[in-house]
Length: 492
Image (cartoon, rainbow, N blue to C red):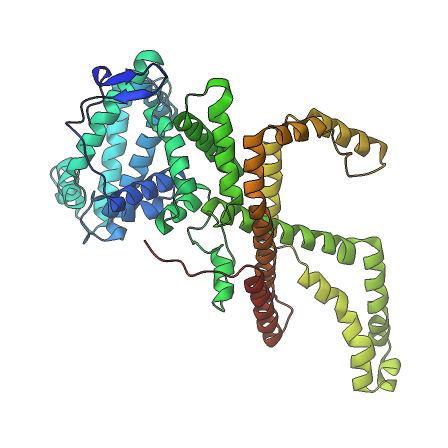
């Protein structure tokens, strides 16, 4: 807890040597996971989850109600403070940013004293509103701040470990600010956070990773797909954040490269790429692999439905067929004489039911709000990844083929040199061969994910009868379990 410059040395091979381990603090596993969850919720501004985090971290007594913590306003204040710390620059830069924010909120022409008074008045007004919401007669309170301070003492307390962590962080940030005036210790924690969340298979770490990526914290796919397996049709409401995914991927690479070796001749970056490949192709699976499989299944399902809708609902041919199927029904409805000539059963079989077919297909392939979010997310991910691609030959081939209309599939770039390099390098070749079994496993998981997605669609279909929905859902889930049997997860 005392990482001042005198306790930090750089070894001759570029590593960090830490001296004086007299002031150290053991962090229990439960507290580690509580910190991971807290950072994930703060980072994604999930204010509803923060009160429980306060209890898990020991900031609040276990018997305090979550509603009271939520209404205290501490979550918004904490988010504001965290946002300022993340932008870096130490106290001086934070003071500048807070001043600018106050000017935008209270008026750009106010002096420093007037800004302070306006902020104080605003704070008092919020405190009075808070007390009033709790049934307190504000007019009878002689000192609002003292009353709020008394009430907050019942809600919050700083555990001893926080003082040690704050001391270590402030010392390290001071070192960083002496080199870079915009240094942010909070930002420097993200590479470790990404490395920990990508590799830790604990259920709590998995939930924290999903939260960081903007997804439901449910471990088994999404809440909607899990509900299908339990016989309940509830649609998932959260989607992957492409920006956050790429940010965490970069942080994971940075952390792995920095801790694997001193990055001479790109050895650290190579190690990072290999570790990331192992995460994606690990036969035993990983949380990141599960998330990507889930998202691929969602995208494949939404894309297929979109293409089918274009073909069977929105195309000129589909509209012509729909019109021809509805024409006999329209004719019968316009002519009472014609309607009286046809027996009811015959009319229903050859006129009414065919006329309903286009509507049923339309409803079956209707694009939901979830579909639109999934396709939008896929577009965002394509843009993020596309901006990082350096394969000019692939892009040139694609542009040429698209411009002359000859084919929508680009010609295969010349990869012979790359293949020759892989084959000639024993270490790389062994690494690739080691991961090959993981490719087939990943393929099976994607296939199973598509079947489970089909089960979800069947269970939530507005067109299919209830028995048909259950049967189709059960068949697809069984097929998915045959392709990729799910093992029971042991809680840690």
